[in-house]
Length: 221
Image 1 (spheres, rainbow, N blue to C red):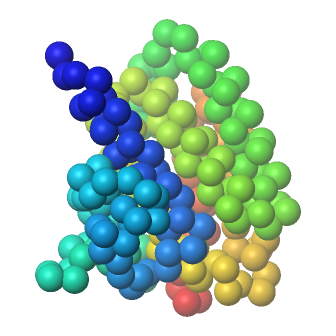
Image 2 (image 1 turned 180 degrees about the vertical axis):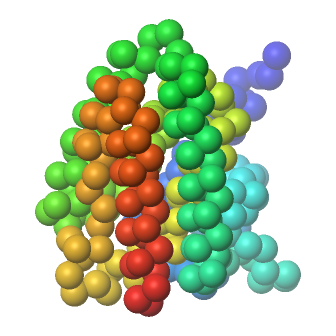
């Protein structure tokens, strides 16, 4: 059993990783930004060890990349990267909903859907108002909880990682959008309604529209 020092360090490691991920998602650390372990350690006034571990974690998640002899850099993702992520996401999500249609949701899913619905409503409102940073937070939680209905943590974590990467790519472009509201998808509540009713055709249609919306937006870049 690890000692309290290890627990504290691991908690700090996660806090630093979460803080840096939020900075990237908010566009305050744009793609291509470089920094060292020492700079981040000084910024957060912590030792180098948990910072190095946090940066390695974010690199494993595809958000950062190691720059030899220079530190770390926020990964620069291309439109082709984005299209590939949408394709991977679409294939897995389609499989999730086919499974739900065939087997039904896991025990206790009713309570989970109540929480998912709240996330969805907040995400929809944020999208309709053009509140990008608020939308990202609710959108990530919405999809994470929704994918959790299949009770498979590997699928949930895989989709969450891809969705974070999608937002990392999208944020710098969306921040330059003159018509931001039109670029944001707001079908979260409609999707929860379809899932609640076990309407497989409606679910498939909404998710397909979601992916087509993302690809159409990327095609304009």
